[in-house]
Amino acid sequence: MAEQVEEEEQNTTAIDEPHKLELPTRRVKNIMKLDKDINKVNSEALFLIASSTELFLQFLAEKSALVTLEKKKRTVRIDHIRAATKRHRPTSDFLLDSLPMPPQPSDHQNNPPKDRAKSKTDKKPVPFATKSIDAFFHKST
Image 1 (cartoon, one colour):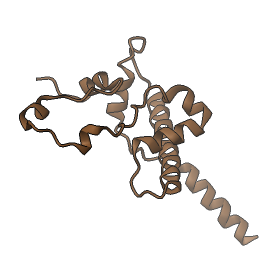
Image 2: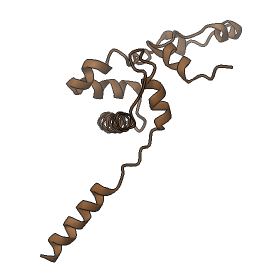
Image 3: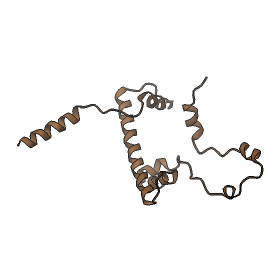
Image 4: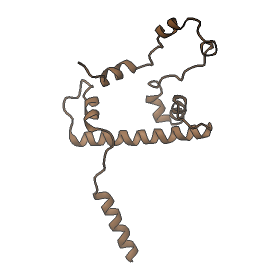
């Protein structure tokens, strides 16, 4: 009987404690306001969006880590994230198109360039949807 009372007290204290967010709510709010249809953001809605984003990122990180371990690697790479996304149908439906393709091995890596000056001026193509994200995070002067 005493054990049940202690369990109930632990459960109620876990419910009463507010959830501490890891994501900065101000940045989440700014990202939400990028949508032209959103003028104001309610604090409860902001909390729910930030919390669900954290849960989703935790889920994606765990699944990507499992793929990394299956491939006997120690570093999570974009191809591991893509594989984890493909395995989970709801995530795959909306996220797979936004993830950049993993870099393909090329002959350029095996043969060093003869003219170093030319290789520095060559720019790699920007991954899909990177420009809009980068523009948001760069400070305007």
